[in-house]
Length: 427
Image (cartoon, helix red, strand yellow):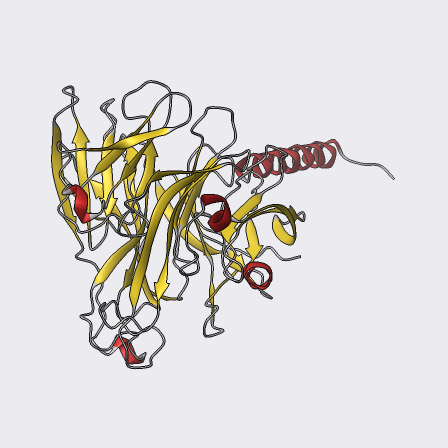
C-alpha cells in the first residue's frame, strides 16, 4: 500500500506532539509524599492514652529511621516510647515498645494520681542528638470540695488538679527533678536557646503563683542540667496561659519573636535591643457558635462559651518571607466544634485572611486539631495537612468519643493560594 508524504508527515507530528504533552504532564504533576498517619484506637488499646506532642509528622526518637510515639500510660502511670511500622501509604499499622520508665518510682514522689494531664515536651538538653522528656507530674483530683475546676465525673462534687514537681527524663533513663514548685497549667513549657550559647533553655509560660512572675526561664548549664528559675520580665504576657508557645522570627527581620495563644494570640516582636520587644495582641473575630452549641449539648453548662486557640502554626504560604499564622480554634464549653482560620500580616498587624484559601467553619471533632506544614507534592512551596489519626477509613479524622468521622483535608499550595481537597490514600 502506498502512503502519501502528507499522511506520513502528519503522523510524525502527531507522535511528537503526544510525547511532548506526556512529558509536560509528568513535569507538572510531581509525586505526592503521603502524610504520616496512625491508628489512634490501636494505640489507645496499648496505652490508654494518645501520644503527646505528636504533630502528624515524622518523629524519630532513637535515630533508627522509623517513626516513634511517646505517651504516659494511663493504666500504670509510666512513660512509654513506641516505634511504629508504616506501610507504603505511610500508615502506622503496628507498634513496638522501646522503653518503659516508672517515673513516679524513679523521681521518688507520691503517686497521688495518673499523669494523663502531664505537661511534656521533647528537647535535647545535652546536645547528644537524642531528646530528653521534660514533664510536669500533673493529674486530676476527683471529689475535691476545696477546688472548683469542674465536675469531671458528674457526681455533684467539684474536682481539682494535682500539680506535682517538674522533672527531666534523660535518654539514659535517669530522672531528675529541676523544680519542686510546679508549672500551674499543662501546655505552658517550651524550649529555646535564649542566651545563644548553643544549648536549649526552658521557658515556663505559666509559673506557680509563688514566683510572682508571668514568665520564667530555666537556663541550661551547658551540661544538660536546668538551673533555677529566673523571671523574664521584659516579655509582655497578658493572657492567663499560653497553650502553644513558640519562639520564631515571624516578620523576617532577623530577630526571634515570642508567640503564645489562649483566647487570643500574643506576639512580642524581637528588636535590635535584646531587652526590648514590641507587642501585638490578636483577638479572635472569626466564626462564632450559638450558646446551645448549635444543637450539641454543652460540655460545661455553667461556663461561658469562649473560643480558644488550641493550636497555632506559623508558616510562609505566599512566599513573601513573612509567616502566616494558621490556627485551630475550639470552644471551652462546646469542645466538639472547631474553626480553622489563617492570619496574615499586612506589616502593621495580623488579621484573618480568606484570600489565600484556608478557612473552614465548624469542623466537628473532640480531638484537638493540629496542622502540619510540608512540601507534600515536592513543588517548592509548603502545603497544609490536618493531623492524622485514622481507624477504618481512608482519610478520616476520627472523633473517638462519639464515633463520628470527618474528612481529613489536604490544602495544596497553588502559587501562594491554598486549594482544599479531600485526599484518598488507602491500604
